[in-house]
Length: 336
Image (cartoon, rainbow, N blue to C red; front, side):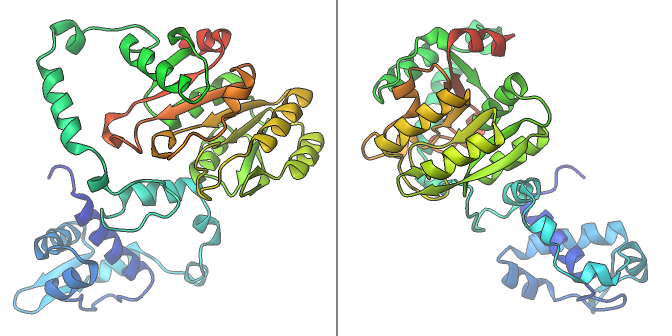
């Protein structure tokens, strides 16, 4: 039947949840197509398709002139227990679940903590013009392999833009990635062993937790203040837990919006150096700044700080382009 539209999937999942939660019992009548469309803010054709697909799955049956009803089989298929009635607190804070729900949600749904701009804020017309220009490019650009580091002109441009924020990096110190998420994933592969401790800000971008759990890291949080991490707490945690990595945002911190101060940056770098902590600085919101904030990578010179970025939040999530900037030996290992 082909790919199921996102809105249709959302309607189907809503009905499944109501059946599983006993809000709709076997033999019970579903809301009319128009009523459910109005409640869920989708088209009537979307509800029709969702109901038809659920009929195909055996969860619903259609009665001409009457409507749609829950089948008896649905009660058995979604067996209910008393334990199911309670809130799933573990799922409510599961970062994998949060990520999936955010990506599968309807376009108009609120997605707090994701850091995604509304589509109409993004430069869609500019992206379309760029794609039309690319379609007229010479064959090698469209069909051949390129440098393992990624497109050289783009790495040059990224290097120039980083220099505007005080970070010196040659094109050979920049490796293109699919996204900021892939950048962190690759760095975790390179730098972590299962059981290693990683510091994150508290609060932090929820996807950091998902990535670190996937790498079986031990996660420890450090309170984040309006000027950066609480440096006294940072010192205590580093001394107690001996972390391998610290992952943070320096500019426009997600989700707090705080900006790192030079004083906090200096102390964090001194503590990292004294305790051999590597820092991953996620800078995906750089293009949204009014004026450049301090960067750990600028103070450190890409010695123990690895700087990553992405264009997913500011140009197009579908473009799939991010980068890692690091010292040459780490770039060599990442390239391999």
